[in-house]
Length: 387
Image (cartoon, rainbow, N blue to C red; front, side, top):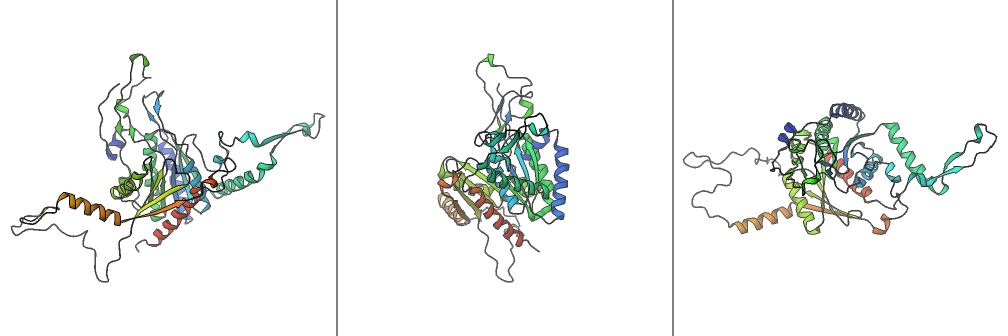
């Protein structure tokens, strides 16, 4: 199976790829949730979590996936709820979720801390049925989790959505962010999902299962459109947007994060090294511009192109005849220095030993500090809203 690659803009993607069947229903529920939180004056954070699949057939048998279990997203959602935010938790189907994450089937199986108590009577009456109880040394942890879970549901501050494919994810993200636009600066986007970089457009998929009898398989996949730009500029221009950058080469972490901020213009990139992400992250953001002196206005956005003596409009970057040009090497070096000076990095570390204790209940989770730092920044940013 061989197809030629195609480049999709976000607009072209949504014009050619079909929405998930449940999209309208999901949107209506999100709209009602957002409306209620806004009326109560509560900030809302969209937390995306888990990995996306890339189907290879219309009748899906084979697909590409990644290793994300949704740990960061599910953990962070709990801390956002604790901080007083309402949370829209948009997660991969069957990935970890807030609260129940503590009892993952692989690390802390639920059945392992349940006991069967013998019945008080053996005469066949109602009291002769065995009782189920929680193992004594597990009760304190379970009570803590259950109390928080019940409080969140009583207050109605958690709304969940599920996706499976990268197509599901992109359609949901656009729809949810558009609904959250009414919150203006009280909307935060915590984009922790591990989203596929490549996909196979529906028009290029095999209808049925790809047969193995034909030998080797060759598939040319297309790049998933970059959706941060329309998210920032169109879908929810007032939102506070946090993206994540995962790298295996630590030397690429900060340069890649800076590039993303330059390209998309959002607020924060949180950088993770693959092997240190559970106990070390870096916040990369642009430094605020210094205030202008009293009486001085910013003319950069309203300046007109220069006109030469002949009346010809001078294009941006065009040099006047006879001017001395800077060499490309010097220009590039100067640009790099300017970029480095315009960003700030803030590292968060926790003790590695604190990340391991009882399965499901580490002494310390780095997401607690991540969320605390973001809440501080977000509230500060809300306070600086232009009047």
